[in-house]
Image 1 (cartoon, one colour):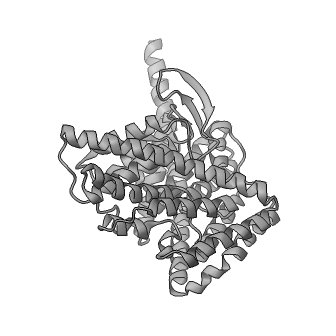
Image 2 (cartoon, helix red, strand yellow):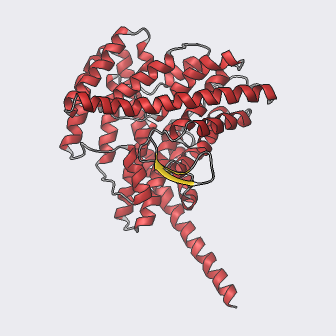
Length: 420
């Protein structure tokens, strides 16, 4: 009898938790999804303005200085960006609500002026801060607030990028490498799908995914080629992460004043935009460049330029995300290196996107799901292989310095170190 009572009590507790999180996560998904949709629309609008009026690029130094001053006035000059979101999940670090409008406005300003930055990384801050505020308003306990932050991350990522499964798993996987926050599986998935459906209802994601071309058959040769490309993408991801961290340190060393640093960084990016041919392809997140490359173009140096533009932009103090720039770097490298190995052009770009994203974020499961949602399941084994190789060979480097590497990548042992 006691066993029956315990079973019924456990079932009732699980059902109550399920209903609670379905309601809370759906609410977070709809609210954050609406904000992320507005964010997407604003980014698209200012990108159109910049394309129509190229002279706007001359505002880059002023835009950088304005962003730093905006954060200073709001008392957020030392804001850690996406790293704060990771710490909020792992250690219940408070996230102020003003983080949401700040990252919204500053990222829009970055894109208007032509800086090289993404949107999805910024969306993690937008969604995480809004969800954290909702958790405080609802007087949730510390542990439930962490789940709320993950729900906000998933909803914002999904609404912007149109990959609901990837977004849900990314929110659970990115914080502590080697530990998945499975308690947040239902909440994150509900929030992610809710945000995605709202965004689609409002006109986003009519066409989700990229054209990856014809995939090769699964053979010993194609697997060997994929392993080789995955290994090279691991090195590219390490270089990308190192460039991102090094640029910020170099700026700080030689230009200690944040306002001057941002203005000088804007001037450097502006100079490159004026000097280099087709430099407009390296402004913004890089979606236009990705589609050109997957469409058949080969620009062997594009991955180096995108890496340089993004490091100069974000290292100087401009705001935005790193995710789509990482995908762009991977696509550019893949479309150049893959055909040298005998792989099809567009498919090589798709492999490069998944593998470099994996190496930079240390999220192999997310990367495999991303390749599935973006490119379809025809060659999912090869995508998984490229991601696995890149994950293992990229070492302990990562885009986010507050990301914890809990378990070793080469041995079944606890390492518990921060990404470099």
